[in-house]
Amino acid sequence: MKKTPLLLLLLLCLSAEVFAQAPVLSGLLDTKLTLAGGSDPSEIRFGAEEYANLRLKVNVGERASVFTSFNLTAAAGSTALVASMLNNSPAHSLPLTAFSGGENYIAALELERLYFRINSELLDVEAGLMRLAFGYGQVWGPSDFLNPRNPLHPDARPRAILGSSVSLYPSDTSKIQAFAAAPKNAFEQDGNGALFGLSGDKHWDRASVQLLYTYEIPKAETPDGLHYAGLSVKAEVELGLTAEVFYMYDNRDRAGFDGIAASAGFDYSFFDGSLYILAEYFFSGKKSFSSAVYEKRNYLYAMLMYRFNDYTNASLSCVAGLDDISFSPVIGFEHDLFQGATLSFTGRVPLDRDTFSGNEKHGELGPDSTDTSFEITAKLRMRF
Image (cartoon, rainbow, N blue to C red):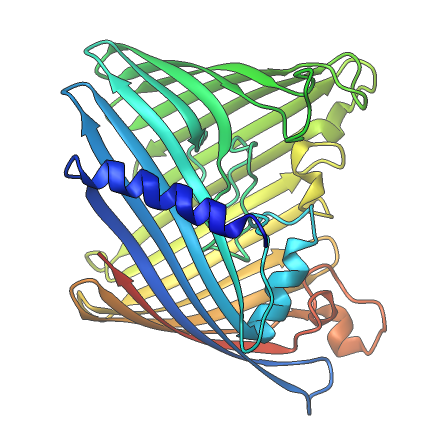
């Protein structure tokens, strides 16, 4: 990575300038060990990873703030192999990072966020390398179309976009936001594929609604441009309810029902919050924005978590593909060692109906999808 020293120099210069103005430094450090089995039960793989997300914030006068964050990663063994494979998969929802090779480990440095925010009594302005998130869904997030989520990788930090937004607050319970984003092709010079949109949020005591519209400037694949429209709703009754629908319209190739991505779910707590359940269904049309990540149409996520006390909990969750009866159950245990430090253990076993029937063709979430029959992870996370 010939450009890494230059990037490091730029980050150091930026940090020096920021530190001169009393910044707020925060972040997290993950130390992770992984044990996994391959398609052959006798094949055992080991991996190690050190990951840090560092964030800096500095106030500029009374109205403005500058934010920057970057990721540092070092990996070895099976973790390094998986990271390099994901780096070459453009359909994957994890950020694409350039890794540098070497003895003992591979490493990566990625600029994650770099933007400013100006606040006033009625409106906020943001611009730069930033995150534009939409919708109230807790798992799948169809309205979060700029970077579709993947519950198989809940710790993955969504990739930022180069863009800007202006948020107007007509009242304490409403917001209107105009936004723009650069094309996904970083080398596009004529602006084709850029996005412009509007969103509106309205909140009541027990319910919230968000409306979203986005237009994508024509490009070679879509000469008439693309239109996106979304609706997201959440309500707090006896259950916590969420529902989202997001539609992609191409005037040249009308997707019809295939252009829809939608989700609906609920969450509920029992025994004064000791037992928590969450479930969310997801539908992905074959021509919707999410089809690059999800191969099938119907998915379900379910999670059950029990808190033994304020410091310890155990959970059981599962992502299921309903079309091919493939699923990926995960059992987890988490304990807060002290303030800012959490030790966790997770175990994942990809399964599908073909695993038990002996068929050679496996489902999307089955063991052959990642050549992994099981995965056990131990992680120490430190927040500061």
